[in-house]
Length: 475
Image (cartoon, rainbow, N blue to C red; front, side, top):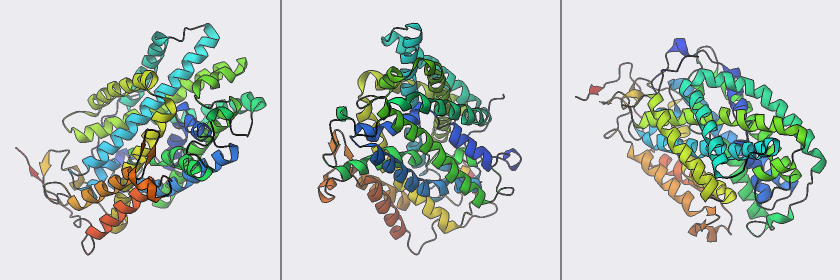
């Protein structure tokens, strides 16, 4: 129970004692929470039936995992987190693109987890003990969840890994009980209260479900996987085993809770909201297990997200310690929780968040993977830390610490995605060329990857690592 002292610096070989099983545990245990379960409700709220919702979630998760899982191998080689590792492609300063993307992803999912978990906890406490459901009650529950989350995030990776191992078994048992609790009320028909297909017809709505509910899950991990694999030694565990563990952890860790969310959404007739109908439809005997699932699961998931946020802010502000950065981002996430409860519509906020972040995050992931393939997994770990040491030089310095080819490719890919996205309150101008179908994920990845490949054609994607990379200290 010691506070982790490592930030985004290189993890020494002696401390890289985790293995593929730990990776599965952390991906499974941390995702069995209402913050992930609620994504299974999205296709239901879009007006899809049971089988259409299930196929959208499964297809999106499998496609997203194929893209995301190989990123785990990057930090296996570099022994640091993924945003710092992307300095090999973007430059030691240009990798701030990845840090900002990771910070936004983790911030949104942390707030969402505490928000949904707190709403469910308040509803259960109201049924059990008559707790008022006014603003004060929500505020207290949010504060308690946020405080518990901060404690786990500050203590760091080892404590969160132990918590995830416990949750992998405990939350699975609670979800099995939940299937039995809600099964008598299950229906497979689309809910009338959803108001029909959100986008007017089946296929555009199904594709929206695929991206918003299925694809968004793996994409949320594009900057997070390295936080765990940097503690796995490549001398003791092969890349193939690590990749298989990542596939298993992501697929099981996302499909199990999301499909539970879809199942309970139909059983609870949850069309316009999820947490409230879920609590209202619960039989009395399941209220205590539901309270445990909402509290413990939320702390496990939000704790890992907040931990990653602290690492990303630490990468942006090298002078700050990981602990200081974690406390800072915790305050911002808590503000977002209250904004989510009092100011935002749940469906619109979630849909907009995941689609926007998928559009800007996918090209970064594609460029990072292209670089990994080109360099064959060979990195200069010391040169990646130049910015963190407030130094200059090194094989990844490029021009002033930026590889503008990679940055331009990412910007063009992200811009193309934003022009093709379909949100509840905004439709990109490119949608008229796609028949109203949101292809922002595909377009952003293709444009970003193709631009990067074109701009770096005939060039070494980054300088060949040297055994003793240069670095001139800044006075």
